[in-house]
Image 1 (tube, rainbow, N blue to C red):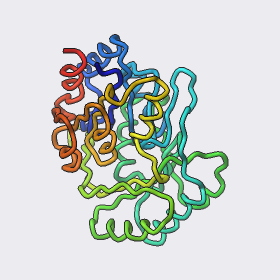
Image 2 (cartoon, rainbow, N blue to C red):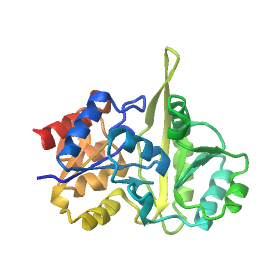
Image 3 (cartoon, helix red, strand yellow):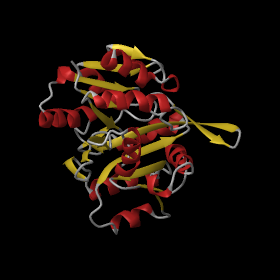
Length: 291
């Protein structure tokens, strides 16, 4: 019997408009009644995930920053942390600035950026539909380097690098790969997100990668959590769609990929569910937990 379901957000639980459907919420709440742990596992910062966790009733724990942090919602504290140092962040910022490439820095509480572009534009549009208390915090600054240097006590989860040109993107990856003690997510395909503007749908497309401290991974965080909860890995379901979900899908007792996931993820999954726009998470929970 499965006891814990780890679920990615973007491209998995959320549809292309950043929404959890009412039917999916209902299915998750039925699973929670069976004392199943529903654990959101995302690259987003704390407040962004907390809003969604509260919305679906998954109020025990969640994983942020692709495994850099586990947050205890009952006690409102992190119980597991693997942060990047300020010095390491500044080293990567310097490379990005010298090569005029778009980047964002995720702390535990906010996303630091110079412009509302790519994934941050998606979060910004998502925020417009939410009450202020439920929004993803975005901090716009002109001089990121100076801003970071003057930050005290900030905890850095990850850095994302984005560009529309594959050539420019691959060029910057080669330079960043020379930085020591970091992991770079190997994303070879283009990210696509839909934004609604009035009656019009706007497609945002870009290449991106995520940089974190070495050995930060969603599965490593899940291992810590299931040890704490006395759950065996065979009792874990992991659901995702992208390269940052690959290890948890491979290592979990049941690894589930969304239809149209990254080919590398599809290859190692035990089961392929429907797309995020077809309530694939709800369908998987119905099949393996509620049936």
